[in-house]
Length: 341
Image 1 (tube, rainbow, N blue to C red):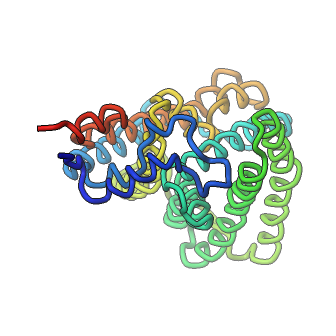
Image 2 (cartoon, helix red, strand yellow):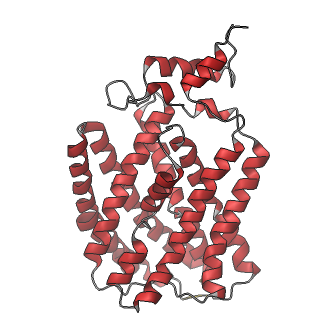
Image 3 (cartoon, rainbow, N blue to C red):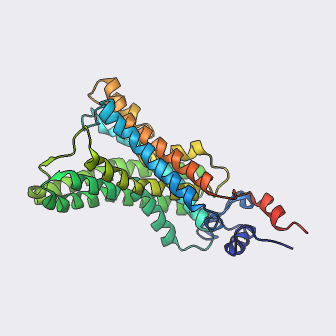
């Protein structure tokens, strides 16, 4: 007699495992090398402890933003600015890490959604994760919330947000083409480096031109000043904490997807999130190429890196804590499911 562990959804999931299909389709090259130990998101859905998840998300939001708030208000660390000697090496290293991380994220999305999933769903989920993880809506909201005058600034900042999103959309599009079309590992790495060159030399200047065009056309609607200055009061901290739910939830979704692969560990997940947010080497690059003193430059950028580390680690540990009973490899799960009694 076989007793399912997590409900009816496991029937389809187990079938997918035994058929060896974990990719977008059987022709796209996303079949797992270890199909006996890969779980899809469907098998985790019924095992989430809601109260543990809410508690973990709340603590992750508080701890993540506390790192940034303490750095600004208590330690008086300066914010990074545009005073960089040369953007080219700074952007290129960040874009290489970003491209490789997007490829890893997209590959994990395809594996987690399972075989036969339409391509547009995998692309849509990956784009959703990228946009939310990079705080697209949060940045727009907080910039508009703090801007003076508020009404006219909303329209201007909305156009700037759309221009910034062009970078994420293009980066994902290049990655999808490479991942779907290039099968060999060394060629895929070379292709991702080429994608990074396109982002650095083509897309980033294009976004800058879009900003200049928006400023020339709608410059009269640009914010004149901001009222959100340190030390921050409740009027700033409350919306800042609440809006941080956007990247935290995106990180949690990404953790759920990545944890479907038993080869992934906390450290590799944190590294991927840092690269997706372009914070992996940012403090060191900014320290080298900024006009600031090296210690001030490092600390000004490192506060965002530490915030990202806290957010990624918190999301990973929240998911592990909230899943009960723990997800087992198929070899153990089959032994539990098919035990004769």
